[in-house]
Amino acid sequence: MIAAEAYALHAGRLAAGAAGYDPRVGPRILLGAQASAHRYAAARLRLRELRAQFDRELDDAEAVLTPTVPMLPPRLADLDDDAAYLRENARAFSLTEFANRLDLPSISLPGAGGARLPAGLLVTGRRLRDRALLHGALAVQAALGDAVS
Image (cartoon, one colour):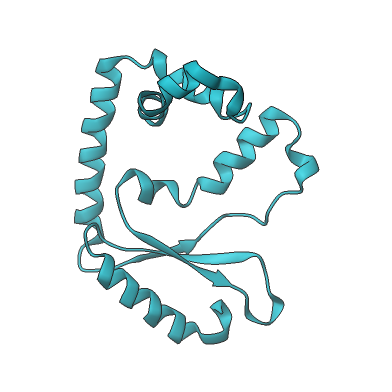
């Protein structure tokens, strides 16, 4: 779905100037031209089902808390290889992508504390409840104090 939608948005610009795109991004967008309509439609239906399932399973909770990313930032030298880059890129988005796909608002609170670690706490709320998420994130930040500021 992502490649198909990105291709729909960028097809004209890619045709006019593909060289202006990052060499790791442009080719991935071009893959969207190969997405079949029936697979795209099936994916949209599946997302609708997953959204409903998330809403049911969240029940009365207002938010889900996860780390923002599951690892510390990789060294740039470790990303020179395309396969390594794609693997680390997917890993970096692994905890945030569900909210993006399910159309859920999220806020990443910086995780620092005394150690100043490059980590964050992701607070993901309910769809169309952005204001409640903002208030909830402030409450989480206040409760954790110096651990996330």
